Amino acid sequence: THHCLSDFMPWLPPLSGSKLKIERANQHINELNTAIATFFKTGADSLRVDTDFAGVDAKPLPKGIPLILGDAVHNLRAALDLMACEIVIIAGGTPSKHCTFPIRDTRQKLVDAVSDGEIKIGGSDICDLITDVIKPYIGGNDPIWSLNKIDIIDKHRLLIPTIGILEVSGVCAHDDNNNTFTDLTFRVGSGGRLNAIGTSAKMHITNYGQPAFDVFFPKDTPSEDQPLIPTLHQLPQVVSGVIETIEKAYLARSQTKP
Image (tube, rainbow, N blue to C red; front, side):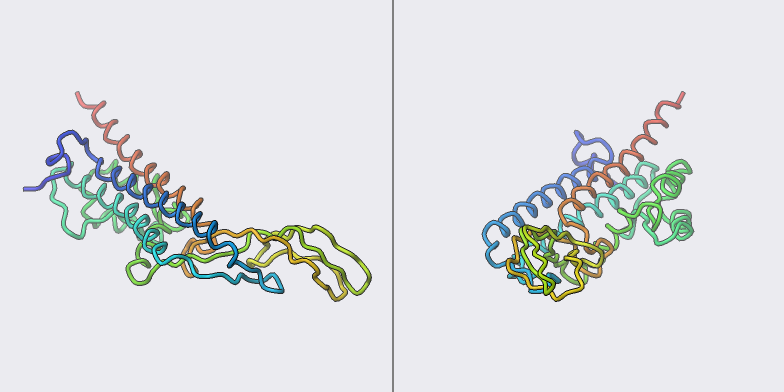
């Protein structure tokens, strides 16, 4: 005997478990946003740009932030797995404890995973949607692929975000050619370094200005160096889009039945 969430909560339609996971992920993201805002508000005096504008000296982020980040990511990945189990159940099957939504590095590996996996019981229309529309592989749906990789990383080490410089404004300097530079703004360029003053003479900084900081995804993750909160806010939308795609397929089925 197999059961789905609606067996225990009759007021919930199919795939509602996935949507509840997304709601929970959004709660974690909002909590994370508040924690980061509080950190910048209360610890701004600890943030310093080093003398060549190449890095940041700062006190560590609060210990709870990696945990909240991991919970948000895991709820989003779990939303897809719950959907995979529902697909099997709707088709009359019983999902195993290993039933997951397939995400792979290449399209061919995805096709193999769908054709050899439990989810194939969902029908050719569902399988085609996964491989040809949702496309959870590198180059097909990078946000979903990245979500999966980050979730795996979180199972082995904490996701510790980094603090980076967005820009430094109000910089004043002069060089050995008697050039004076006043109220300059340096923005982050390639490699995470600030685009500084172009001069062949030795530079003397007289005012290091006011830095603006942000929090970024941890190093050695697929989203490294991406702004943490804006990127996280996009992921629930992407996962919701996947679920909506599957829902529309079931709706189309119901409308074609005699």
